[in-house]
Image (cartoon, rainbow, N blue to C red; front, side, top):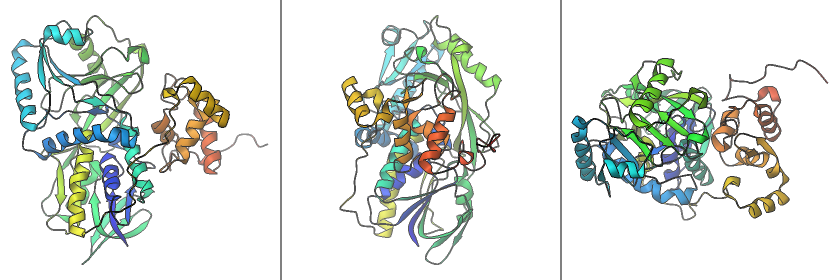
Length: 480
């Protein structure tokens, strides 16, 4: 019998797991994928939003502003990447200038610090590559960006270090409520728990509706992105957004933690909760948006696009976060409808929800909770002297595997053997970027597979891209 079981290994589930690990409780997280951040959390721009966009008085506004405070505080503690470059919402149509004032007033009401509206000359002084057609911009200096995968993994590792159990490729198919506990039926057997946390992203409505007569509905809201090669990573310093529309915050253009430039997302609703294919029509619209509205005499040639990808946001019909205990189901808690700015809001959602859980279950805090997550090897940030010393001690850190991103064998081995370590090619990619460069894994994939097989004690035919059913090899064509 577990005390708490969390459904979902995205950023919401992992931040909740880490916050629960402060307490004396037997906690387990179930994830249907082969890794954390295998769903929505891996496919977004990684923006840390300041909090001016949500409607005042909503849970979304409250969690966004508090979440922005927490992501600043936790970056050094959990050693996840974070760049605080600010964000600009740009206006290019004089008739829409009033919308900046509305956003500013909304942000002030939400409690966002240091907001200001910049006139054209100041905007172009800060971002000279912006279009000369810019009228003004709202500037939020507390905004920034991260790598959403490494960010999620940091919380997962911290939770695991502090005793949370993670079970992957374990899909919850049904929840049965008993008098004093719940039974979770899964593809890997049944689990009993005193309390449940529903953090299932796009599927959170299905579990909510099993437990409540007050039904909710989540729509997959699709966003497609383009990722450009590193020569374009310095086009803008800050995250640049166009004025938001009815479907979301508008198109973003921003540098990534790793020096690339991304453009996106598009925003449109679909029915398929697994529909992450990209479309030529919408990708073309992103380039058109950039070249005609945001960029000043800078072309983004298609040959410099190294990949495109799509993700789905969990848009609940009420367009607000649902963070509560269900009245009809005691000790059934949920974080549902967590769409943008969910990445920023997640630590605040965890803080709030685990506060409810600990009170309701009368949990006591641990005296030996370990807040820090350290010892992540980052060769790119080391001095030459530090690298040489490490290679002398561990020669595998001198063996380059991924030439595009200059990722070594040592970094891949570390990614596999850390808490909640990688077990697939995508798992390695999320942690150390092997396969994310210009060639998109064309050269390094076989070597990464060999390292995975060796470190996991598996045959090469068992190595997968992203878990069972995605095996890379089907057999051997030649026997030794």
